[in-house]
Every structure is written in structure tokens, then in C-alpha cells.
Image (tube, rainbow, N blue to C red):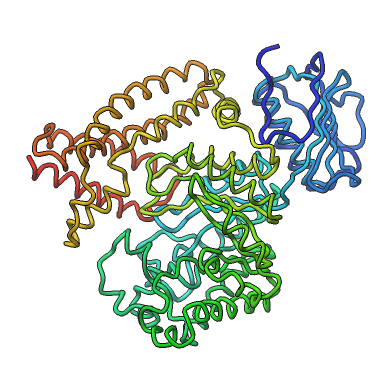
Length: 612
């Protein structure tokens, strides 16, 4: 009856039968005696889903009941995170290999309920993950500091799609004691925030793993008057703020003992808040290493030696605290044999984000003996809307490389370069790609998984939302990255601003794309007919992002042409759009660096009026 029931990640084994079981008002959710106490909260998740999707209030009981419609149990002979689910004429039964396996079976049943309500089609599912560690990495530093409500929603989403790890990227957005000079203009997370989130994640079977930059990417720390003397390059505190420079510089002086003492002090303070056995020290993109105050040392011993000795020292410190160190693998891929010098527990996070990403780095690290995660990305950085085709290609390839070279995990990254202007909900499709392909390495075609995401994540019975969004995200010509680079070139008097203008071909493309954006936005509105009213609000970030893409294409045209549309009217449209953008930002994020984005938008408003 009706369309096929979708389940993401797709189960390893599934056999659908003829017939359906109907949930009734007097049915109960029964926790068998094999269930631990933690399974009660998972049963409550299911209870709420039944009430929302089937309109039934099913009581939870334990032990036995003649009215049990849904039976939940644990069978430790199964794989630890695996589960077995039956729906037949007797009702629903889920057996997990552990409380976490039972939770994953419950999440599968929740997806069925969202599509079928009380009318549950007969099926038998035997399921388990093919990759043990399945994580998501969320930037809470370069633009957005999420509200706790959003972080909990993110944890809910991760658990719903059977992910078991979460990391938050921190440079300066934690309230470190004695470092008010670093976080004073931000809205940092607090110790209580971390403790609360750690507890919440644990209840959903998720390890909250601490991550802290401790080599490169120390922009705010090394621009303080207190610690600027520890920067590889001179006088960082004298430079004006720049989104570009934040990405390109600010590596700590690895030759100074004070650097090691500062960073290990921060690591100790932050580490104490987490129950996780892991600690990610970062150590990526040390672009300046050996080019400033350590140049003489690097000339004698090599940048490789300077890098690995400092990373080794930090990793050994983490191990001494009883934790397993993680670090990003981009630098060491240039000299992978050095990985043998690190503590044997160390995990290398091997990232690569290109849609045509090669397997070379995964292969090189495997041959060097590295214990590694493959780390693809959801393609949202520098964009108003994530690039879905690109991230699908990237994530599917990296998961396949992980299988081929025996990676122990997948960590799907969501960075916030250049102000994190994309709304975080726009990363959810990429999150689902990663969850699906790390759980089941039988990679679904993009068209198929997008139909399923449209139905499950958006409640879209036309199954077309993701097709529209995949087309819409590709229509940006004068991108946010380009807009920032032009603005900084002009305001900071860097020159080369002409490089960021649109050439004639791009101008023609911008005009054409804006016509297509108008059509796609109409299609997006039409989809609402096939969505339940409470879920229609999930499209608001899509409309805001689509309007941004169109506006900046028009701004790019105005910059690049001698004559264009009325600049003052365009400025007013930009500012009107930004008013709505800020309202949306504040629903999920604290103020954090919204003021930096505001500065750029205001600069363009002024420029457009001056042009008129």
C-alpha cells in the first residue's frame, strides 16, 4: 500500500513481506528483562514518535504484557551495534546486540513510522554497521557558536541516522580561564555547556570527542597582546581582522617551551570536561612553519622534523593523560614514514574534500602503518548553500577508500570558513550521505538517496526537494568567497581586486542562473503541497540561501559592468534580505561572529550607494 518504505542508512539485509500490522490504542511498548535501564529513555523516544506519527499514546512497561504491540530486547550474541527487527502479524519486535544496537533498531522503526503511521508493513531486517566509528565534525569557531538547542538537535539527528561520534571544532570559542583577551568579542561555549552536551550525547549512544587547535589555526590566541610573541610570524596583533588571513596564517612557534606549556595547559583544562577516551589535537595546515622565527631551525633539520617533534610531544602528553590522540593528516601525508614516531595509539584523520578525490593519501598512510579515519566533507564552507553533488561524490569515494585500506572510522566534516554563512541545517543531507555510506558500503546512486532524504528528512511525499536543492546550490557565480576576497582587497588596500570580478562569460552565466533560480524557488514552494505543515519551515533556510545566491550574482554583475541595475535599490534589497538572514541566524546560533558578516554586508550596501 503506497510507496516503498525507505530506511537510511539502508539495512544490510531486508526482506519485505505481504501484509501489515496495525498499531492500536491499547498496545504497549514492552521492555524485556534483557534490556538495561538505559533502554528506557530510548523507549521514550519511540513512544513520542508513535504519538506524533500514529496518534497513539502507548504506555511503556517491563517484563511481560498480553497487550504488547512493540517488544524491545537485547541479545548479546548479535553484533554489538547490530539489531534484528521483525514486523509481522504478531506485532513488532526489536532485538539489539547491546543497548546501542537496540537504539539503532528503534531509530529504524521511527523512520518507518514517519512514512506509514500506525499501518506498519511486514518486514524483517537484520542490520549492523560495516564501519565501527562513524562521526560528524562541526565547526563552532569561525562564524557560528550554536545554541545548545541546536547542538542537541544535531545529536538527535546523528543518532537518528546511526552515527556514534561528534566533535566540535574549537580554536577560541571556549571560555578558557585567564584568556578573556582571546574570547572577549565572542559568545564562547562554557564548561557547563560541554558537560550538558556530553551527557546528552551519551544518552543517544554518541561519544562527544574534544577537539582543540594546538599548532596551526590559532588566529585569535596568537593575536592577543599576551601571546602574540609565540607566533611563527612577527606582529600578528597589528594586522586588521581578515577572514582570508585567519585561514592562511597563525601557526605557533614550535621551538619554544612556552608554546608547549600553553597548549598542554589548555588541553588539560578542556579535556577534563569529556568522558571520551579520545582527544583531537588538530595540527593541520601549519602553513607558516619554518618560514618565520623557526626558519633557521627548519633550514638545519627540516620542516618535517620540526613538525613531527612538536606533534609527537603533544601526542605523548595526551597519552600520559590516559587519552588516545587524534590529529589531521594533511601535513604528514607529505612525509608519511614519520608517523611511526608517534605513539602507537595515535589516530590520523585523513581529510580530502574534492569531488574527484583520489585514494593516494589513504593508500600512503595505510602503507606507512597509520591507524586512520577517512574524513570527507559536507561542502558548505564559503557557500550560502552546501554543494550537494560535490559532497556526495567526495563522501562516497572516501568511504570506499576507507573500506579498501581498512580505515577504522569515518569523520564527516562541516567547516565554517569565511564566517559559516550557510545555515547548519543545510549540511544535514551531507551528514546523511556520510552516515549512510559508513554504515553500509553499498553506495546508493545520488538520485536514489536524494529521493529517500527528501522523504525521510523533509517529509516530502513528492521526493523532489533534494533534486531542486542540488540544482539550486550550483547557481552561484559571484560566490561568498569571491565577495569576501573582493571586499578585503578593497577595504584593506591589498590590490588585485580585479581578479575577483566576473569576466564576460561569467556575467552571461550569472544572468542565466538568476533566471533559473527564480524557477527553482517556485518549484521549492510547490513542494510544500506534499509536506505536512510542521515540516514546511525546514525549507526557510533554503529560500534564504537561494535569495542570497541571486543577490550576490547581481552584485557581482554590478561590480563587473560599467552600467547595471539601480545600485541603491539593490543595496536596499540586500539589507532587507540580511534582516531576515539575521533573524534566522539567531534561531540556531548565538551572536558569535555575526558582526563580522554584518560588516561585509554593510560594506557592500555602502559601495552600491556610492556607485549610484
